[in-house]
Length: 69
Image (tube, rainbow, N blue to C red; front, side, top):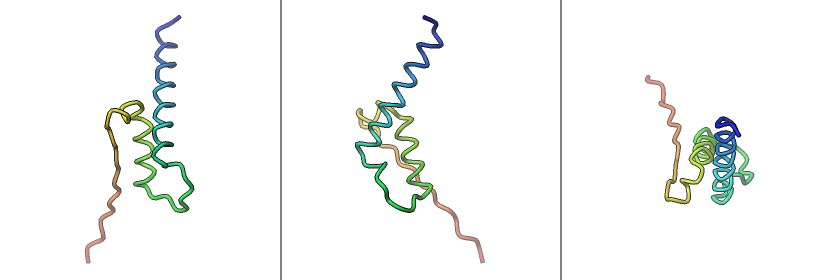
């Protein structure tokens, strides 16, 4: 088996576990309007993968500055 295919399988498993962690946190429930912060938090949670069970709790904020007057 080639190293590339092993890495691909590990990456796939990593992302699936991240998806499970996001599901456990209730991020995939239908909440109507989704902000960029919510979408970013879900994405980072999935990418963090198994680290979520080790206490990593990624949160994203999307603060858009108000225009000056």
